[in-house]
Image 1 (tube, rainbow, N blue to C red):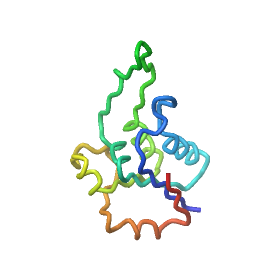
Image 2 (cartoon, rainbow, N blue to C red):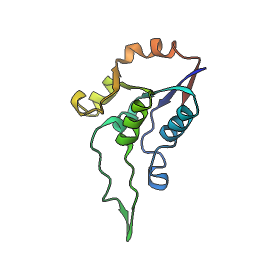
Image 3 (cartoon, rainbow, N blue to C red):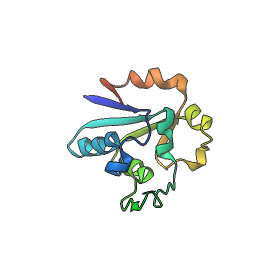
Image 4 (tube, helix red, strand yellow):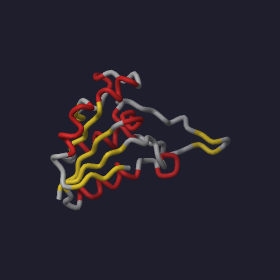
Length: 126
């Protein structure tokens, strides 16, 4: 069963969990033999921006000792063989240039999303 995980809400739970739960569960399921891919769209295209740094994140006197490193997590997905797609128009609307995107992430046009969906047995939208 081929599954496409569509992520469009960015930085959900990253303060508490230090990673995005969907990115994390995708990596875990891939490690268990799952056939998963990811489509980043909307604000989640920010996940693919290389060199993010949240190391200064603090809430009052409490410093986040394990800040999110979502770009690293996305890169690890691609290294595990998970296809990661990014909607290029969503990235451009947010000022993200193609050369700022983590290596291994495939940029696709909005007009190609329906065709991408057709390649999967299940679409899970988060």
